[in-house]
Image 1 (cartoon, rainbow, N blue to C red):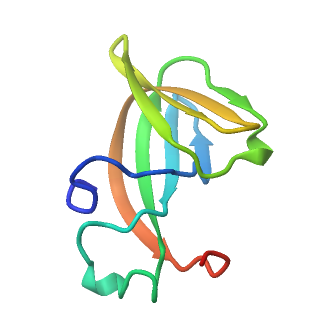
Image 2 (image 1 turned 135 degrees about the vertical axis):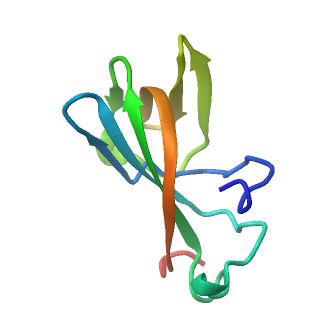
Length: 119
């Protein structure tokens, strides 16, 4: 992800899928609509073959997860706030919010797709 977004700014993101397993393991699928800094040949051309990159992350939660109106989740700015041996992932939209405390997140890979409903 550092090569794709060297400034660390993913823009607005969407927590498309959150998974919670026994033992505190958490999986996160994080679609990003910002154009990457580099072209990845196997993905094709940005805006033609794909316009969304989905980062797959694996981590360990530590604390209570707070979701408000998860059915209304959408793309919005997200922040990571350091806290007690880990960090909080926080996101708020007009009618939804997420607070996810994690000890760590490990990048697993990326997939891409073309959102035909976007211009």
